[in-house]
Structures are given as C-alpha cells and as structure tokens.
Amino acid sequence: MTEDPLIESLRRAVAAAPDDTTLRLHLATLLVGAGDGSAAVEHLAQVLSQDPGSDAARALMSRALGVPAAPPAPEQVPEDGASDEHAGDGAGFDWRRAESDLGDRVPPMFADSSAGQSEVAAYDVEQSALTLADVGGMDDVKKRLNAAFLAPMRNEKLRKMYGKSLRGGLMLYGPPGCGKTFIARALAGEIGAQFLTVSMAQILDMWIGNSEKNVHELFEVARASAPCVLFLDEVDAIGHKRSRLSSDGMRSAVNQLLLELDSVASDNAGLFVLAATNHPWDVDAALRRPGRLDRTLLVLPPDRDARVAIWRYHLSERPVAGIDLKRLAKLTEGYSGADIAHACDSASELALMESIDLDEPRMISQLDIETALRDIRPSVTAWFETARNVALFANEDGTYDDLAAYLRKNRKL
Image (cartoon, rainbow, N blue to C red):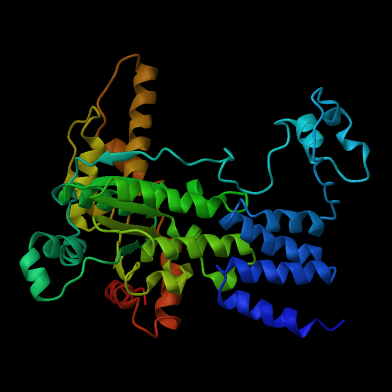
C-alpha cells in the first residue's frame, strides 16, 4: 500500500529536525489515523521523553496502543465517595482504579520527571592529587596537553592576543590499558580542577528518555563543580555513529550529548571535557566538529621511561628484593600498563604460594617477575591489527597520521 504523501513529507521533516516535538506529534496523529500505531508509538515516546507532561501525547499514546480512552470525569462527586467504588463500571477504561489496583508493582514504561527509576543523581566529583609529573615518560602526550589546555590557560593575555579559545574538548584514543584515565586525572590535578569521571555504561538506560536525562544531569553536575575536568570513558558507547544505530532512543542520546557539548542552554565556562575510546573510528563525526571533541590525542603503549615508572609504582608497596627495573622495562617493550600490573600480580602469587608451602614469607624476586612474564603476552596486538587497517584505508583526512607514523616507525604498517 502506497503511503500518504503527507506522512512521507512529515517523516523527512522529522528526520531533519528530530527535536521538534510539534512535528513529531502531528506525524504520530496521522500515523494513528492511518492505522500504523507501532510507528506512532516510537515518535510519541520521543515527544514524552522531552515533554513528559504532554496530555496530547499521552492521549494519543493510549490510542496508538489500542487502549480505550477514559470516560470524562463526573461534574460532581458525591460526598460519600461512592462514585470511586464503581468508577470502572462504565464502557470506558478506568485509569484511576487500575493505578490503585496495581500500585507500585508495575513501573511506568516511559521516563517521567517525577519517576524515580534509574536515577543517576549522585556523581563522585573528586579533587585529583596527581599531576603530569606523576606520569612517567610520554613526553609527546604531555606536549599536546600543554598546547591544548595548560599553556593557553596559564597565559590569559597571550591567549587573548592570539585568539586561542578554550572551547572544545579532547578525545584520547589508543589501545586499552595504556593510561588514558590516569592521564585525564593527572591533567585535572595539574590545573587544580575537580575531576568527574563516568563510564557511558552508567549513562545508558533501557527506559526511553532516561539516557538523555542522565546525560543532561551529568553535565549539570560538572558545570556546578567548575572548574572541572569531565572525563567520558568509553565515549563510543554513547557517541556511536548514528548512521549505524537502529534505535531512535540511542540516536536521541547522541543528540543530547551534542547539545550539552554545544552548551546551547547553559554556559560551559570552566568545564573541560576529555573523552577516551579504544575505537575512535566508531565515534560519530558530529562529535568531532569544532567546539566539541575537536582535538584527538593518541595514547600509545608506554615508552621505556614510562615502563620503569609503572613497574616502580606497582611494586612500591609489595615486599620485593633485587629488582632490576631497567631490565624489566626492556623485557616489556610493547606491553601496556595493564599488562605490567598483571605481571606484578602474577609474580606476587608465585611468591605467596611458595611462602605458604614453606610456611615462611619470602620476598618477591626478579626471577618471580620474569617467570610470570613468560606467560603474559602484550594485550594490544589485536588492537593494532584493526588500527593498521584504519591507517591504511580510512585515513583520507589525516585524522590518524600520528597512528600511521607510529606503525611505520615500528614496522607494523
């Protein structure tokens, strides 16, 4: 059956202006009239996520779901309240009696400003004690951070003279376990700002409209804590390319993130947004436009100086003796920080088990660590296989030039 041309036109208009609730409501009305209630439900859910109090949307949702409308309320309620007892005896569906019977046993299907499901109200805003001096090695990363944030912030007159803006954010990308979160925390301590980190898994919600509400609430907390570094871990989970998303709810969550980064309704002064991802090629291009996450920084496996610092950090509170940190750094070239931490844990287990057998504690030795390393391989190998294809075939705009240079230097390209 050919679709009504007016409905087709409204679909295109809604796709061009997804936040226009009036358009969505008009389209949903026509869809219900055409008997396509399932399609209308999706649009009405979007309307209710933005305007939970819309009586028109709620009434239309009842029609789309095939629920009979409630009869008009009586003009006068008897003093003895008898009308409430038999309110459902008429032809219509008595919503008041149904709500009374069900109580709190059935949660609402859609997000409501008064609903309490899946609230993400309390975020842990902390004061970081780390600085970039605590980050061993990684001189290239520190230089980029200095140019992007630190130098313009510390030299306001020069920043204004050269027209350098502090707007926009920075996206850290690279293989997993290489210290992206540690670097973000150190940057917050370097500028004396509060630090707020959140995984996108904490933001996404099964209830329609709640993901968008959680994103907005997160940014409101960060703005209230300014100066604040807001660190969005696993940003590809919510900032995934919208062209690959089949859910209107997920697309709306991405749109909400874009809205908060643009700060249309609020002021982002003193808010520094950092994001991290292992898969930057899956992040929506709109998130990387100017004023948003418009700068990228490749965080690679730690260099030799960084590996020495990581070994020292993870062994500092363990009973060790005769450890050669420089040799360990040489043995773990290409390993991530997480791999080194895992090796320390494995070496500790070896010493612990032998101490139990001997019934006498002993120190963790160089031999324990090297024995543990024989069973541990770099975890970043699979990531570099994917990254190699991206650098070869998806780098037309030069976004991954740093990655390509590293791969060529290490003969992986």
